[in-house]
Image 1: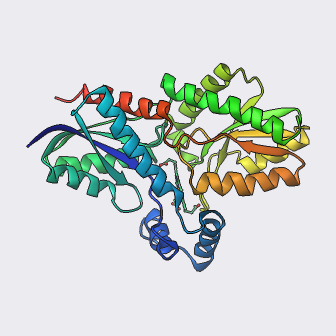
Image 2: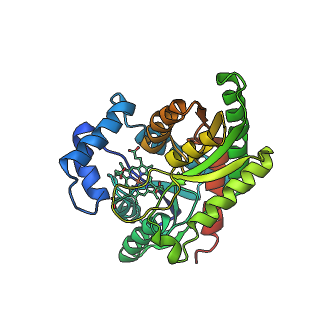
Amino acid sequence: SNDKIGVLVMSYGTPKSMDDIESYYTHIRRGNPPTPELLAELKGRYEAIVGGVFPLRENTDGQVAGLQDKLEQLAPGKFVCYQGLKHASPYIEDGVEAMAADGIKRAVGIVLAPHYSSMSVGGYLKRAKAKAEERGIELAGVESYHLHPKLIEALTERVRNGLAKLDRTSGGATPVKVLFSAHSLPAKINELGDPYERQLLETSEAVAGRAGVKDWQFTWQSAGRTKEPWLGPDILETLEKLSAEGYKGVLVAPVGFVSDHLEVLYDLDIEAKQAAADLGMALERIEMLNRDPLYMETLAESVEEAAATLK
Ligand code: FEC
């Protein structure tokens, strides 16, 4: 057996290639293939951003490597990281199998998303725990780290830099609104007492407070293409309102995401930016965390804390 603690680092996953988009989308839709229209629309969005590379893969690889380095500094020889993806290979279950093959008996599961929802992080942890149990591995899950001081510090720095950039690119346009955002989820989560919305507001408030931003609000983005109601208002609706209220500049801070990927590079940088321009507003977005050292420390410290609960 292996005395090291396995760290299952979980992320969303992205297609391997343009030809792989259909099977990836089918997995997201729990085995239901998308209609030709939906598939064409998604392919169009990837074509607009990728240029042959799916950035989420490289960013997740970098985050896993960065976390391993940070854990090695904190506690030499104690932890070994494995990757497990929700919708692509290596899947969450593959990551647990790899730990089992290495003789790992104790593990921590952490998701590259700071806020807990039963429909997001809860789903990842459920799959990880089920497989770990089957393989006789004790696994402690990190549910959220949305108020970790180093995460707040990293985001605060990005909001400050983003405001300076917006000021430069817009020629000092005012007034400016800071829009915190995250991936929408079906509205029914709130009836289930889900902490997702509350945690997102807590992160937004903490960052706005530290950055000295008074004029901010929270909005949703990237709602799914299904008939059920999703949490709103959506960012495109919010932009229309802001324009009607006389705003000239918008800084988007997508605090629910930690990486450059489709939902940021397309939904914000292309779609929302164009919508803002059509409404006469300048729009910039904060830089994503990717492999930021403060984010790596946030993850490493959260892993150590969870590891302390293992038998
Ligand atoms: O760059 C990439 O290749 C992947 C970008 C990507 C990230 C991401 C994160 C989250 N999602 C969340 C929830 C949902 C729900 C549905 C849903 C659907 C999609 C589709 C694509 C997609 N998501 Fe995603 N998501 C990313 C990509 N997501 C593509 C399918 C087309 C579309 O609807 O746009 C709806 C599923 C259904 O139809 O039933 C729900 C949540 C996150 C943030 C937390 C996390 O990272 O896990 C929540 C990145």
